[in-house]
Image (cartoon, rainbow, N blue to C red; front, side, top):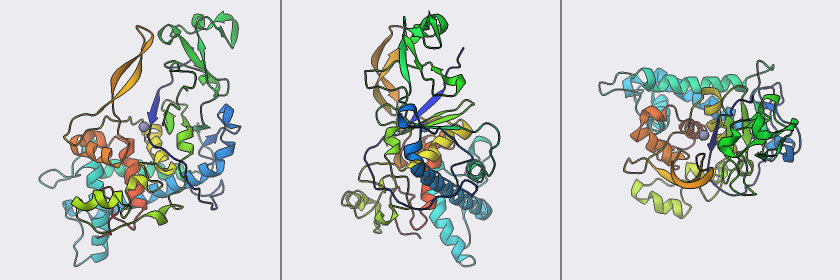
Length: 386
Ligand SMILES: [Zn+2]
């Protein structure tokens, strides 16, 4: 029988964006999309990425560049931390400047690496260690020259899936009804099917569609989705594929005015200061490289999306239609609101730092902030570097 697909959904936001045109690495160079990814080559109606391959190459290249910069910066902090005091401003002025730009962002997104006695924390709060390991692993994946082991699959969109309802024949065993071959149909009233997926993954057990338009993974503003169990699969959804594949192409939009925090909201609203979340657009929009690093947290480290908090430290929830397998109907209920932008990532770090160091969004935001090294992002918006 088919294994149950364990999946993770991510990301909210909106809007189409201009696309930067530039050369992308060849397959045998650093930061190349292949050979690390097994890209499903075909039309979008069957989950293929042909129409998006150039953008995917650009976005993966930048996800790699973000990660290489993040690795360099965390190694720098690890070597110069001086128990949290950082480099001496007189003796090492350049190192001090770099420290003052990168360390506050690390604190904001992961909490302090030190205890109250200024000793390095260990175990599940070993901040430097965990951040370094995340981006070292990314660097490895970004440096692949020859295919090795089981490559993760990359799909675009999930239109190839359809929901087979109870009583319908099993497409791969037409003499049987679907629920005879897949007893968990009882729970969902059917099963999702695609013959375009890898062989082991033709049948996926998951809640039925909410309406005729509904999809298995790419619901609403979901930008991408990752199957964490091997063999691993990442899907790009239409909302994610609409995002800008290149932060480099839009970085000229970044505006900055040095400001006391009290005035920041007004200056952001009047477009005089740019938020890290919306460099690519006017809303809390994402870019593909940041989404991609988030997904890599799921894919490489089996990280899950953690529930985030409001400004008072209360866990946040969202109203959503949730499948109830007892009544076999969708019911409106409160679901945990997961961590999906800079502000939510910093709240997670503030109220639950143990979760922050396991949160894919925190790593994605950190890498983006490190890559955009002309600015200090620790407040979530562009400020002049120290
Ligand atoms: Zn996620």
